[in-house]
Length: 234
Image (cartoon, rainbow, N blue to C red; front, side, top):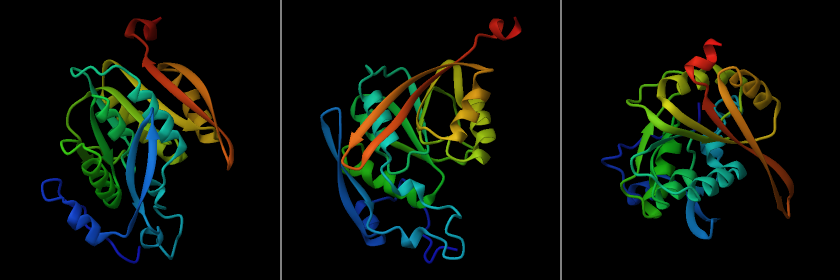
């Protein structure tokens, strides 16, 4: 087990004061579509790592992923519709949901890891989103209520073992006529996932190239729209 476990804070009791007593953090500036946010990130990930098995629940949530920047920019650029609801899966530190909320979207951020939820809540408070809905969601045993007009996520298709849970979760939470938007890096797991999704969804993909001092990265922004029932019957 990790060297120290932190119990997930209730959203009703959560405060930045308690958060900073619990975690050592650094603030990382991130700019999305000209708007700069300061995101709390762990000063070190050591406390979140299982020393007996480093890859057991490795804290992937603790990184600001390039794909999250792509998704955040895309959502922030879409005209908001207050009548439409958005579910973000695997919100990590909260960058995507915060950018979407600040752009006027009605979005619910979700994560399964208790520490990730605490960081997402802290970042929402620190970046002017005190009313943000942030819930715990286990992809393989979902207990969230309701359905959503859009489901979004970044770097969600990371492990092959999660594909069954993702597909079932889309079925459970996506409204009829709804849309799924995912930003992903290029990897084998993603290829298998998209081949599977194409049997039930119209899949459109747009490749984006990110260049920095560290090199060039290729990202893909996917848009999935479920086929009409009559199409499936033909």
